[in-house]
Image 1 (cartoon, rainbow, N blue to C red):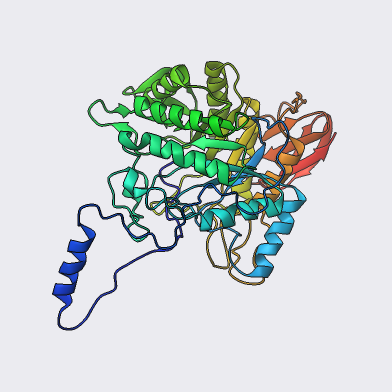
Image 2: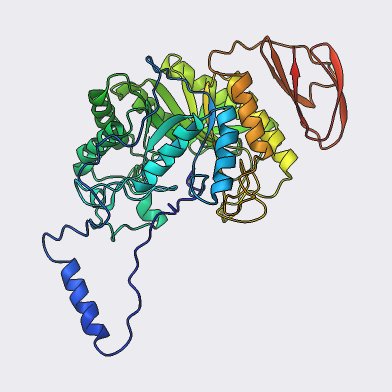
Length: 473
């Protein structure tokens, strides 16, 4: 959502300070060399065979489905690196309940995939895909971001600009076809990846003159990528537009939707307009992708942190109505506002997990069948609020945390195709619990920071503060 971090964790290339006589002259020579006409940039660490199949691909389903379930996204740091004992611990835990896992092609743990036109560097991407394969998960690739030479920057493996502004710049229109070709290269390299998301949050697609999203530009890029992927394999599943479903304070009038609103706020009409254009002009889609937070753009949780998750239900239903019930994915979803450093550590872990569970319930009620938790994993440290596992920098790391327990269990009990059932809740308990059930499992969330005695589905039971309880039916 533009605030979840952007560092790639990839190799950095920096000039070191030079001391002594001749420094100025050397700097001048380097500048002249780097700006000579036709300078193609360094090809160090790259190869030409980017489309060569990597490793031993997992055998994908004969008929891929557009729904993959409930999983997570790999970010700057993950369990593909660190202590061998720690990474194996994570692999083993994920292997017990394999989950769908997203990896971006550039940034968030992956280096520049094509630093020079026709020269590729997939070392980081290979390692992440290998990790997904090792855990038995379903790999999903988000096609973002773009090499520098596609967006006005310099080519070269030593020229990548990792600033947030540069990373979040969209390709120039003249390079849309180059980006589609890169997408096809990725698809050929990883034939077991059957699901691709086109771009991330409309990054760089903003029309300054009209103060709205550049939905024409995004849709043009999307359509070229869609066709390129289908040319590689018609059974590849492709989705977009990965818009941030921003909501406003309900009292705000400017840019406010008059139709999609609730106690949680009012949708930004500019987002709905962008979605409408993509939906009407897309070349095709196998699933539809959005992301967003339960809180408003001002970070207000309305009417409270649990009630705010009702936004996920309302938005999910709206999207499915617009697309004729295309399978719906939330590529990211947030329920806890972050601070200025994009850190979410103001809640206790039981509180955090309880609100996350409420968010999952809300999405499922709205018809969502796939969603991905943005894993805020850190490289090192004793604690990691909201993370799926402890940092893997030490042999004792990689231990599963309560958020992973929640997502794994939710994916196991409520996979795509689940038929949800209504269950009875005692009248005096309705304000205090959130529930979701099918014919076999019942999930109950205590929304209060105190113990309660609740009667749900005809059964009376005790619940601790912010407890997330699973029951068999």
